[in-house]
Image 1 (cartoon, rainbow, N blue to C red):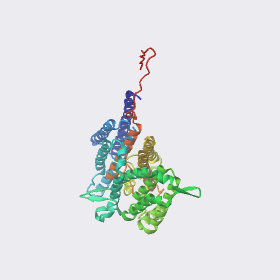
Image 2: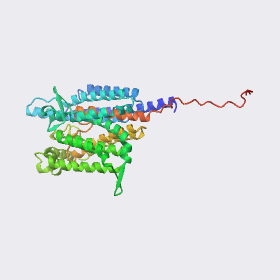
Image 3: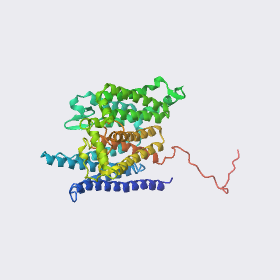
Length: 472
């Protein structure tokens, strides 16, 4: 591939990204305007500054990507921009409903969360660019395998070590609250632990995949090789016990088991993981009241529809009200669902955009996961393959856990929908995750340089070249 064709290839990718980015921003701005106009405003007075801030942020991100990752996947950034824009519009819609309710009750108007989410979007994009600029090659992260493990475990367990006044919100000890600010360190811990998993499994892959004993036609690992899975299982149970965070526990363990399966290609690791998950779930149900309560709500939500099951029941009513095409942006009542901006934003979208809109959002998530897996398959090094697969799967698993909980497919867990839900920690971490996926896709598509030191190939002399005979 010549230099001219390489430059043309990278330009085509970035131009495609720019066009899709403009479309995503226009669609997000249209959703924001539709919410305002449904509320009674002929034209949103803050649409211009809102649109300018969003356009400037993503425009800067596109320019930096064009410079530092010219071969990166062109669909990832527009996809997250569209999800982020839809999320901002829905959060603003719920802000308007909260303000209306405060006026009716004669209370002080609450501070809108959409503006704060816009600030977190800017912070997330800055860290997105920081990851791309600092991590010029994802393979350098393999050097910090055990450093990432220490940092990840510290961030994961730190809230459990703090007093409840600094870490507990709604019964779960997963936060760090200082000076009016709160962060959820488990979101960043997830990224650090995936770097550790990828680095560890690359080094131990042969041992974990070859050393085995055959039982009933199935290749099972040796007992001493079960250590990594048992450690991950114990850590996830510790998070569940100490921090009462069912979602993070499930996400953490699921990511490790899938990455272990990808590294070894052995079904036995999946079966062992499923057995450990089933055993841990049973023990948690028997020993911990908050787990038992969530399972009971999942199985019998209408038995206590005005009490513990109120949130799930209202969410199901919202989805039913939306039907196929929805009530329209700004014309439903998603504010009747507790935590509609965070845990139950899927219900908000299902009510106002209907089954069609909700399926479109889920297809967009599927597209992001597919592009992440494509990058993992295309990259040449084993560390990149494992890390890319883990990052893409973590996004897919989180979407499944959240959507499954809202639709009553599985028990509620308390996680937030990536890029849609209100929450700074989750949004910032997901932008860093996408930056790593874009770096992996950039390295995968980057033309390989010729090996150093290869001797130049010279053309043979022409037939009429002069020949000199040397006599001894």
